[in-house]
Length: 415
Ligand SMILES: Cc1cc2nc3c(=O)[nH]c(=O)nc-3n(C[C@H](O)[C@H](O)[C@H](O)COP(=O)(O)OP(=O)(O)OC[C@H]3O[C@@H](n4cnc5c(N)ncnc54)[C@H](O)[C@@H]3O)c2cc1C
Image (cartoon, rainbow, N blue to C red; front, top):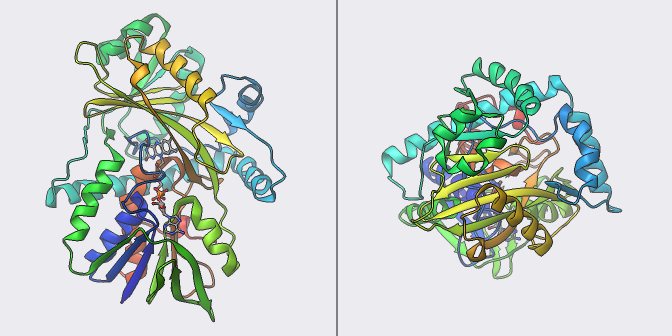
């Protein structure tokens, strides 16, 4: 069977990998001449297996007015005359209830743990170099009330297999001495030893090298998909700027651009692009640098040491359609980072922006597109695409080949 996978970000690459492992002939197509040139390029680097709670949470509703009104808010919302935006927001608000949040966390943990195990398996067979470190994640809180409100979730997730420990402020600094300059401001933190970080771009490059060694994989890079040609509930051709690609089945893993690709077929994907930013700061050996993944809970900033640099990622801009760097947001981010890590040389920071392809309930859509016999989706991993990519791809490959599913795929079915 010949499968065309559209999109060579982390989701498309991992999809191509597992489909090829199942013996299918795979063509991986991307409009760029190299892989991981869009959202998978410079993300936060977190392999955040235990932090899969949806953005839609009842607590968010109370925080919305302050987030939307304050200039230094991690979330910025630009209302648009766009039915898709309002529909997404409505679904988001509907998802902000405790019962749905708990159910979603349980479902997402099953997918993230599948991803974690899949990474172990992959690395046991192929030692990929992508600056992976498994020193764990420390989420720090500056406010005792915010820490206290996070503890019930820790207790509940423990029952689902998450190993997480609540620490006081001094214990956070003992564990991560680079936090010394804010020691007096820390109410405490939550340490999750099983979390990891890595460079998503380097992971994609390593996976590309593996794929090029497989006889049943063709990389069609530098080729833009213009349309999916459908006939009687099937895709009969993938039309590109360089001619049609033959396909018995098609996987759409094109991030946010999956939406316009599918629209002409009458499929409206419930995805919205939430823009975020990252800074990559070269690390100077003379300064004390983090060795753990750190999250600043109040400011929603994540820090990951990646090889010789510190990757810092943050912010959600809603109501923008392009992954442009907004200088005002970057200067706010730099100011907030400097307050926590005053010795970092932020003058040398590389700024980047990407669109998180997000569903309102934060769950990805993995499976057959409704009403289309040979069209498959692997989209909507949102803020967790690097974390969830391997599990998502495994789940997709099992469905496409009729193999037994490693976890329940029901919660992720596109509807
Ligand atoms: C600021 C920020 C921080 C993040 N931090 C983390 C993190 O710490 N941990 C984590 O797990 N996740 C994180 N994410 C999320 C993660 O980066 C994304 O979920 C993930 O990269 C999405 O991968 P993808 O393959 O779906 O999309 P992409 O990487 O965008 O890939 C889609 C591909 O499709 C191609 N394409 C699109 N249209 C066409 C077309 N018409 N023809 C041909 N090719 C096409 C594009 O060129 C692109 O290569 C972060 C995201 C952002 C923005």
